[in-house]
Image 1 (cartoon, rainbow, N blue to C red):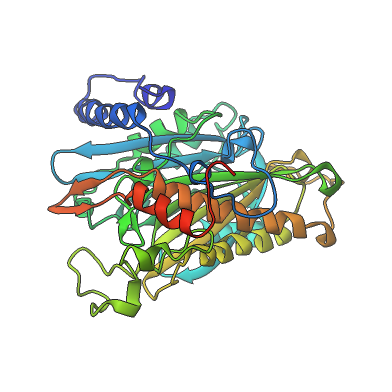
Image 2: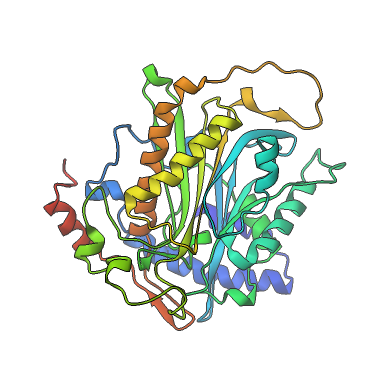
Length: 403
C-alpha cells in the first residue's frame, strides 16, 4: 500500500460514509498492489525523451520544491470508477500565503470552478482539485471546509476553491455522485512530496484518451544554470480524443485507432461518449518567480503541448491549464494592504520555461497513457494500450530504450 493511500484513510471514524470509503480503499489497494508487482513503463522506459531539457529527479510535478500531491481512487462494485487528485502548492497556509497563478482556456467545454477570481486577482488561495464533472460541487465543499479548518483561518468568510474536471461517465456511474466532500478533504490531507502514482488512479481512475484507458500522468523539467536553473512540473488528467502520436511516431494509425479520419461515429452516437470528445486538465507548477501575466502565457504553452500528442481539441473537449509559481517573491499575504517589492523574471526570460512546459506536458500525457491499466465499469471496458506493440512501433521510428 502506498503511503499516500494509507494516509488518506487514516482518520477512519466508523461512520457509514467512512465504512464505504474503507471498503473502496480495500478494492483500490488490491488493484494498486497488482500494478506495483508488474509496473507498466513510463515514456522514458521506452526510449521516449521529449524535448531538450532534462527531467527532475522524479520526473514529476513534485520535483518543484514544496509541491505535494494526494489522490483518492474510488472503485466499488461494477460501476464506480472515479476519484480525486489534489495538488497543494506549498506546505504552509495557502489561503493566508497565496501563490501567483493563472488559467488558460483552450476549449471551454468544461467546468473550471474558481477560474474567474484567478483571472481577476492573479492568485490561487486553495489546493487545486481534479475530479469528475458531476463532483465539482462536492469538491468545492470539500476544499472550503478543509480551508476553513486550517489554523489561522478562523475569521475567513470567503474561499475561492479551484476545481477542474473531466467526464468519466463512460466507465463510472457518474450520476451516482459517489465523490463526497470527505473524499476531497482526505485527498488534500494525503498530499505528500515524492513519487506520484500515475495511470488509472485518483481523478484518472475512469478516464480515457485516444480510445485507450488513460488517467493521471506527470513529468518535469529542470533548466540549466545558465537559463536560471528553475524547475517546472506538470500533472495531467487525460480524457480526450485525437490521433495518437508519440514523439513523432504514428502510433494511433499503426494501432488502427486513427480517430475521426476513419470513424463513422458522430459526437453523441456512442453511449459511452464520443471517442473524439473529452477533456484534459493540466496543472503546471514552477519555482521561477514569474507573475500572473506570464503564468497565463506559460499555461497556454501547456495546452499547446497537447497538440504534440495528437490531441484533436474537439467540440466537446474541455482543455484547460492552471499554472502557478511557488516563489515567495510573487506570493500575496492575505489581507495585507502594505506596498511590497517584488523581483520577477522579465518576459524575455520566459522562453526556456515555455519550452519546458511544452515538453513536460507532452511527456505527462504519454505517462498517463502508458501507465494506465485496463479498467471495466458500467458495462464497458477501456483497454490499456498494448506496450509490446507500442515498443515495436517506436523502435521502427528510431526510439530505443538503450539510447
